[in-house]
Length: 383
Image (spheres, rainbow, N blue to C red):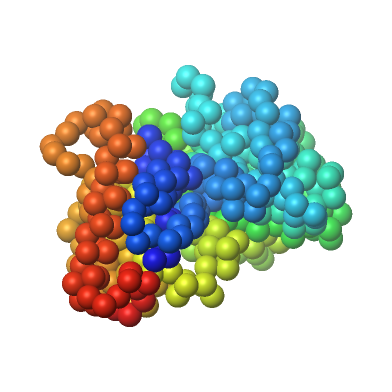
């Protein structure tokens, strides 16, 4: 029996790689399980780089950079041949917040320094995982690290997002060589537009420290400043799905750096050529902290469920799940929580509960298969 373990993270306690390792370790002890492969289910957000390093067997290179508030730190990137892989959260992530720094005083300059260093190392293709960001600056910090200058009508250079509310003109001459030499891909599975009630400011800014309606309105106004600026040049930005991801980064970088956006989960799956190899497995194990209808929107476990369709059975292991009306006959869902528990207890016990549930779910699957196919030696396959 061949099993693919592809867990998403359990936020607050287990990364995708850690959760996948726990499940895989438990399943390798079971009779009838011949092979267990790992593909941590990451989408470009926090924990993606360690998963990509595992899948590509690469070691991290650490770069001097800064956090969203400008404090120095070292962050990892992966470099292979002339390709670099960067996780935005490692330098511009929400977990790096210091105290109550205003969201409009924070920027993505640290991520820009990682991109700049990758270019200096000779990389011609750069993948940047978006997710878990602490900022709403439309990627202006990234662009500043690459030499772009933003100015007010009086010629003052503008640096912070709040200062950029006074934007009058942009000097992007420094990007000429970058655009000729580098292909930039943004990895994300968020489909929000830049502006409006479902946009970056309204939906995500409150999660990043926009503590009142005034600050949320300023974030929305900043987005609109850039929409208007480029509209005056005859260029439309912010209207494509995903333009609101990570504080609006795709909206601006698509225009100024010719960046392309890709599904983060699909990119991770491509590293192991999963689409072509899916039928080599008898069972897929996936899951995340909370499994609900949003899990089916082309990301996370939903991506795997859709990829498997009715070809391979899928077991979902989750902390909690809402009632889901599913058309997939190959899907089973198990909560790892064995009894009513507080969130604190669930986080503390997640590792053991995940291992126990994985073991019991797969034993149940194997026993059920044996009853349907009593002559089988659990080589499995037909459903």
